Amino acid sequence: MKQVLNSFFVILLAGVCITACQKVDDLPLYQNATPAVLTTSATTLAPARADSTKSLLTVNWTYPNHATADPNSIKYTIDIDSVGKNFSNPLSKVVVGSLTTSFLAKDFNEFLLAKGYMPGVVTSLEMRVVSSYGNNNERVNSNAVNLKYTPYAIRVIASYAFPKALWIAGNFQNWTPATAPQIVDVAATGTTGTNYEGYINFNNPSPEFKLVKGNDWSAGDIGSAGPGLLGGGDNIKLPTAGIYRIKANTVAKTWSFDKIDSWGIIGDATPNGWNSSTAMTLNPDGTYSINASLTTGEFKFRANNSWDMNFGDNKAGGGPDNTPEYGGDNIVITSAGNYTITLDLTKAGNYYYTLRKL
Image (cartoon, rainbow, N blue to C red; front, side, top):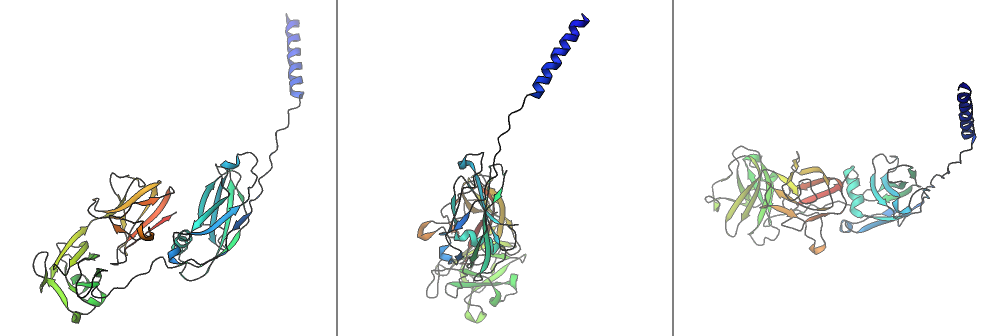
């Protein structure tokens, strides 16, 4: 019996030796990707504000020969940053499969203004494309292309005088017309208007004010003639401190107010969908802003979580143009991601919003 067992172990050992000595086939060797070659349709860019929503720059690049993937699945990240920053905080755009993309003028402009670059001053930029697999493995940088870009002023602040504007002087700002905020009717003519309005922060606990026809009391003023009425000499009063939309009609001699407790965003692109507003933050400068994760879809601005006051951006007449309009068209989000949204209602007749993808 012992001899049989010894023979078995000898045969087993021989089999192991034969298996171990067999040569394993060489694994395939995949070459590293070659850097894409990046080219641009221009290298000097100086758009006007009217070009904001127009295509500013087309970029193309060669296929980087990633060896083990379908070319249509390769991920390309186009980075743009100031020269010398080593792409540490770039404007980035991701493209999958394609070897070309384009940028709107506002893509460049909003990015640079947010970084503190001044309108009208030439800025030196560089651009690259980083190719990789979809999981970001095997990242390969292309050549860098230098660009010269001149930012434009993102908005032009219009100035208004009487009869298009009335100054709101009151105890919340020491009764000084020269520094008073305005309400505006851009269509007013002669000595009257029918649709003056503006958003004002009355920080006095018992606000009182008058409408002044200029930046000095000598221009004449309009006081209260009773609840909701204009034409008398009494001060116009509000119930409490806060932010109010003030409206006035000097033809009908009426006025009204709406207290603003909040502004928010609402829509299928927003975190709460169309069910409720996602609140924005009131900033020290009087603007409202929010950092939010948006999906592809649409949204609007809404006050007090109600539809009584809402802003969209009409597409007619060359829009959307970042000018909020009451009851306007839904604002479209075409690319999901994290956004900073700002709503500026601090200057009557110059309402504005910005939408910047982070």
